[in-house]
Image (tube, rainbow, N blue to C red; front, side):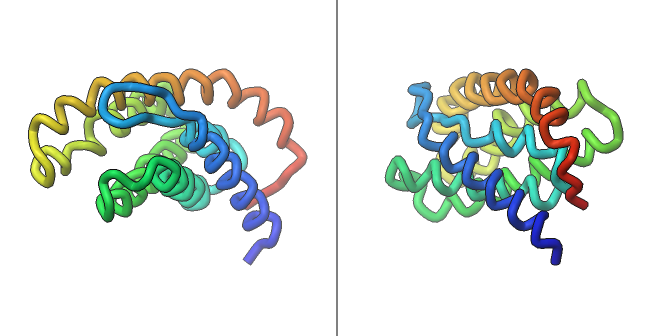
Length: 159
């Protein structure tokens, strides 16, 4: 296993954890900026490792507010892993506009869809607007940071 890869992944996961502590008061519960470092990390990390960092970020975000959804947060962490993995694959294929659209739709509509059935339709409809706002904010910040971080980490070869 590449020590540099593990180290950079741990640093990104730590930044996700710090972003998880920056809460956005929106609708049901609160959203956080935990996805920003993971979204930016796709420029320097393989998809699986960006997904791991995103999962860690979500779990820290959930822990910092008392795990209101209990074990459902494990499902959300798996969803975050999948969303970031697909986002990174889209980035690698050069589908730049599609990756941002995918992230916003997947994080705000597709990811909460299981809760329509597991909790209630009202929870789903209440969560989607706040998740849409948080997803857009995470995406805009990451979009602005990505070129800067890409240039900053050009010397870091992580494969």
